[in-house]
Image 1: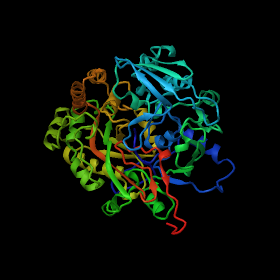
Image 2: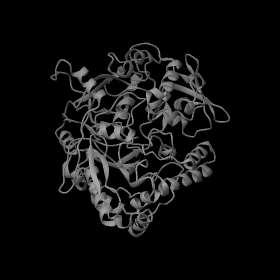
Image 3: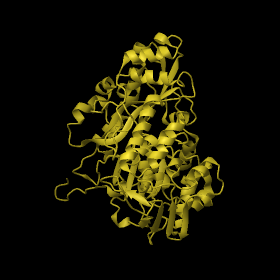
Image 4: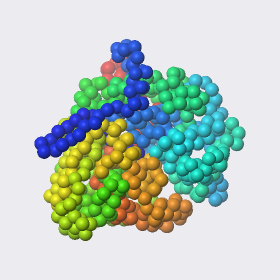
Amino acid sequence: MNFSTSLPLLRWRGVRLVNRARRGFFLLLFSACLLGAGCVRHEPPADLVILNGVEPESLDPAIITGQADMRVVISLFEGLMRLDPKKAEPIPAMAERWEVSSDGRIYTFHLRSNLVWSTGEPITADDVVYSWIRALNPDTASDYAGQLFYLKNAEDYNSGKLKDPALVGVHALDARTVRVELNNPTAFFLDLCAFPTLAVVPRKTIEQYGDQWIKARPLPVSGAYELVDWRLSDKIRVRKNPRYWDAANTKSTVIDFLPIGSATTALNLYETGGADIAWDKELVPVDLLDVLLKRPDFHSFPVLGTYFVRMNVTRKPFDDPRVREALNLAVDKARLTRKITKAGEPPADHFVPSGIAKYHSPKGAAYNPEKARQLLAAAGYPGGRGFPHFQYMFNASAGGAANTHAKVAVELQQMWHDTLGIEMELHQVEWSVYLAAQSKLDYDMCRASWIGDYNDADTFLNMFTSNNGNNRTGWKSDRYDELIRQADMTTDPAQREKTFQEAEALLIREGPILPIFFYVGLNYYNDAKIKGIYNNILDMHPVNYIWKEKPSPATGH
């Protein structure tokens, strides 16, 4: 999943930063709808206040891609499975049990008998089928539609080759039974069933309101919380759904998610008691890391995440693999982590983070300025002569000079100038513009990051297949596609790892990305008061498990 933050324009001497900050049309409409009568509201305080990073682009499970969006969405909409908060492994949710055929291709899920929408209507197997087909429908334009390509005929339906959704491998056998037919055994299929793209959404509401269905009130939800309000640049408020099948174990009644992009603002809000939890490293001031990491309420933990650079291979000179490799070899990644990130992030010479289940990445090429210059010369740009000026796009973040994305951008600009003799312009945009530009391939190079959606190498490597909506580079490789298909079809773990390793080596050697470093998870909260958070390897923390201890009447603490 995409992982980042956003806020205003920064400027450095000698560095041109172009700020095209503007909100998306959807968010403007949504803001107008919700703010309507005015901004002053008197309402009771929330049980939990969470600093959530960027303003979500949407709360529609089928189209979201960002981690901030997903944190809210998993509280509102649920699928057949959900994540265990301790290990981030799939556990039963809407499906109370299931059977798998002997060949591993047929799953038969049995839904709970007490499933209802928050508005009281029953949730049935037909709702599951509708939700999955909707995510696959090309008109939905889901970047995560590929999560469902493991189903029979799903990819052909998404591409338009197949028009009849009834031929896709998901069917309702009766009101409480869903039958799923896969192309091949898929080791992580239950993990996918816990992912937001496969969550169950309300058909009647979507058909009534179309793209604006999230604005419906009351909004029927399938998850532990109902959406009370979404006020742009203010907060998202959710309230416990009393009709949720597991409502008895939902810990907090009212939760506010605050869209905070500034690490300084986030820390100040937390320190003054205005917030209980801050998710992710982007809300930790980099310049204070040395001090903050010594505090017991600041938590550091391993996480499956990679910070990298995307290159648009549909534009010259990035269509040349020699240019892409030269740019990679000219970056001193250890210097970046030592000078900028400062939280012990391992420099990356490959793409899949260490710690992924049953997989070890092949070692990539090390920092090699001399070879980088040779490759650039072989591509026709000796000493950088004739190399066109290009832009490096990154999303805005608050925090002035402490902004990690901006600092990395400046360092890359300097390294490539000094080592290769090429000139790069820095192009800073707001989060919504950043996402749209990637989707339209309207960029030269851009910073990027990816947090694993499940604990398998496939979540990192599959995204660069030709038809994956999260590829966003224009890169296509028949050989790479075939290797990923072979790995996903293989049931032998050793052979599967070997095939994935060949694919990753190809991706790093010829592909459209430049890995920079692997993330370390960081968040802050007082674990003497806040309970139910477990710093798992996916950095996903379902809020229905989280609560704040009440002060003791005797002590007030």
